[in-house]
Image (cartoon, rainbow, N blue to C red):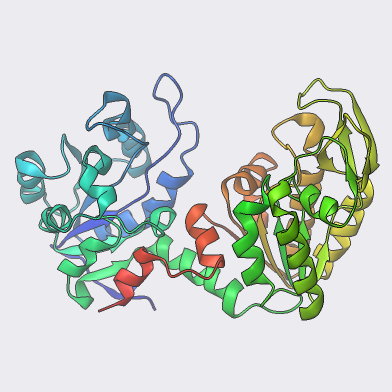
Length: 399
C-alpha cells in the first residue's frame, strides 16, 4: 500500500500541487478537463479522511505577472462541478495575506484554490524563498502533478525540502504515473514494442537511443520517418525531413542492428500535393515519393505490417501519431495503430500511451479505457523515457 493511501489526513491541511493547466476556449470554457478529473481521487481521499485541501497549480504562460485570462478563477465552476457539494474558496494570490488567512481559516472537508503560481517569476526560477512561503500554507505536501515533474520549479521540486520525509508524498495520480512508467521501462515483458511518431527526429533522438537498450521492436511513423527513409537513400519528394539529422538517423539504424532491435519504418505512405486537408491524395512507396508530393500518413501495407508487430507484443509504449491525424484524410494510420494497441491490450499486452497527440488520438477514437494506461504527462513522460531523473520525483524520494 502506498504512503499516500496509508496516511490519515484527519485535521491536516494537505498542500497539493496539481496540474490544472487545461485548455480553454475564447469564452473561458474548458475544452478538455482530463487533468482536472485526474486529480479528483487524490483530493477526495484527503477530504474523506477529514482533512482539508489547498490546491496550487500553474496555468498557461503569463509573461509579466498577473493577467486576467490566466487566472485560475476561470476553473472554479468546473472544479465545483467535479467535487459536488464541497465548499471551495479562492485566494486571489498564491502567497501573501489573502492566501495565508484563507489557508489558516480552512476547515476539515473544505478546499482552497490558490491563484496561478506563474504570476510569480520565482516559480519557474525555483526560488527558495518563494517555495518556503508556499510551504507554510499546509501541514503536508502532496505532489500530484506528473505533467510538471520534469521541471525544477519552486512548487514541484524545491518546496519538498521544507517537509520531513513523512510529510511529503506523491498523490494517487503521480503514484500511478510513476508505477506505470517504471513498469514499461524496468519490468517490461518481452517482446517490448515502442511506437514512436511525430514530426521531428530531433525531438525523439534521446528516447530512441534509450529504448534501443530495452525494446525488442521500434515502429517509427509520422513525419520523422522520412528523415530515416532519406538516410537510407530513399526518394521522399517534399516530405518533412531534417537534413541535419540524416547522419544521426543512419547511426540509430546501425546501432539498432548491432543490438538486435528491429526498427520498422512504413513501407508505403498516403501522399498529398500540399499540406492541406483539401489536397490531392495518392499513395506511394515511402522510399519512392514523387517530387512535389509529401507523405502525410502511413499507407495500407505499413498499417498491416505494424498491426502484426503490435499483436505480437507483450509490452507497448506509444508516443506520437503516424500522420497528420487532425486532418480526416490523414488519420487512418493513427486510428489503425490505436485500434491495434487496444486489441493487443485486450489479448493481455500492457500498453502505455503518452504524449499529447497520442492521448488526443485514443480519446478521439474512444479507446482511452481500452489501453492499460494513458499518461497525463507529455514532456515529463518523454524525459522519463529518455532516462533522465525528474526533479519532481527526486524531491519526494530524497528524505
